[in-house]
Image 1 (cartoon, rainbow, N blue to C red):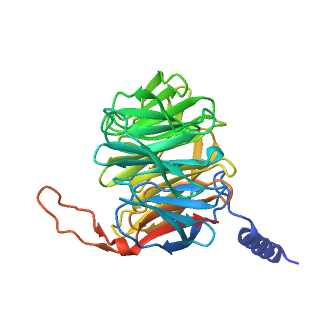
Image 2 (cartoon, rainbow, N blue to C red):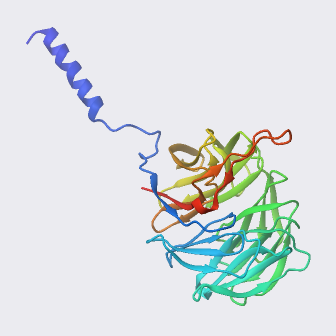
Image 3 (cartoon, one colour):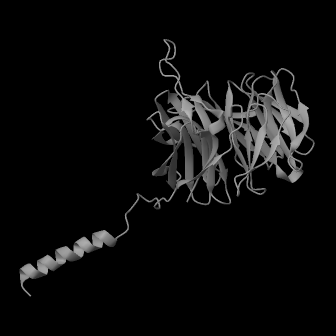
Length: 360
């Protein structure tokens, strides 16, 4: 064999190796995340948060005056809990067969749910509270923390008794909250561009950290093992940012661009993947869910951008199936621009309301 033939065969072998060698993804595994299905529910009313009870295989979806309870496997509505107004979110304390729903009638209400019978079991009206919005049930302290966006505090409810037991006062308007599993809560203060840490037992504020470059932080999630907070932020009407913060120091360790209008963050400790659901991918026609892999606690790689129906902005994670859920409408009508609002959001068509399910 001549030198030229040897060289030629070397080229062929090198090309073949390129074809069969797996791609390197900067430390992150290849992603198979995709849209699994859209589940048409229809129904009347608006929506905000979505909640998954992975043990019961249920998805709770508060509409304006009722809660649609969906079987996670079949996608069918198994109950419609009525008798409430101004709903935003649901949290579940499965060990007590109890749920909590945030409502406004018109002042702040906390509805107590019987999640076995799937009905309203009671109602709390905290004095002076306004704007009942997001909430979080902490299985460590057995307490539900209900954020009041209009009165800048959280009302605390005992998970077992269903009674109000205290108030946490914030320096501004609270959005989503998350627990570290060690008796501490973290909450976005959306109008102050800050994150507050407080003691879930004493209700004392422990730390207040500036979250820049996260301005208007809405969604929040946590890697409790590595003590990292994930913040889904809406800095302006045309962009978004996903920020990672050290939960012990308040230092921002990473920042990644995302879509428009994100209102949801989640972290899956089994896969080390973090998620941000965005209302608008930037084209004004689709939503998008970003998936980032935690290569190290301070380094992240984007592994997927999953297009969804427009408006899917809040999130719920099932830690058993590793699927995430969002909600939105498939059909949206254009809204004429005005001088005050030159770029209005389209108007949702409630009959096209859907659950969006994403996974591998």
